[in-house]
Length: 300
Image (cartoon, rainbow, N blue to C red; front, side, top):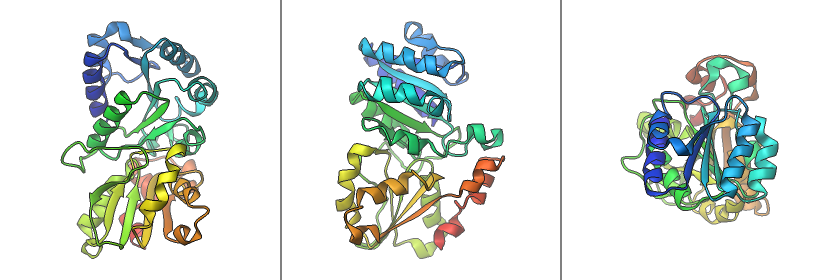
């Protein structure tokens, strides 16, 4: 995902002189191609994420679309006040890029677990969450964000994610992206972010789920709740899947979108991480399993 991100960023910067990249003294091995091509639009803010976000706000206020790149929780929780007051409130075109969403950096412990980030970011009314499920969705989200500069949050995996899509799809905020069509009016899995690999793999490895519809929602946020009810009506049951805690997460967001429609609420069930992973250290696959994100548990 990181490579797809930097490829799309470089391509955009070649066409648009207003694209800038700011890093918090990390990203080496990924960001160098951009830094070499556009040194005047590359800034290393050092290990000072709050200052970094202030810098991004300043650049954006002068007409730049700024991408602020850091790991997991550092550009989010550490910068919550700056995102709220500087970016979201003023509607500035800054894309906060968090690498290592979910438990991708699980071996570094709780400080690097990005399992509450949706909860924070979706509470800001102007922030658009971009949570791509594979490198193709990264490219799709980047192309949308470049065309529609706004306060946004791009949540990436760490490295080595397989492509689920064979080509770059078209994405829009709040619109479910069909990965595999199932029976009309049947059951569906709806994922956001890296959970797409789990849901698509479930169908491949369990033939009894061939009739399921598999969808992802790469772009969502507070403003796109109004679009969810009509999409939910098409299915008898929708299971949301996310590598985030259930509290304040993606499934909770979907339920909130239908809070006045109890007939639709009853269709939703949520598969998310158990909070016990917050005290665990281990590789991503192990922690996902401990947290309840396995094919077997999704089948229940």
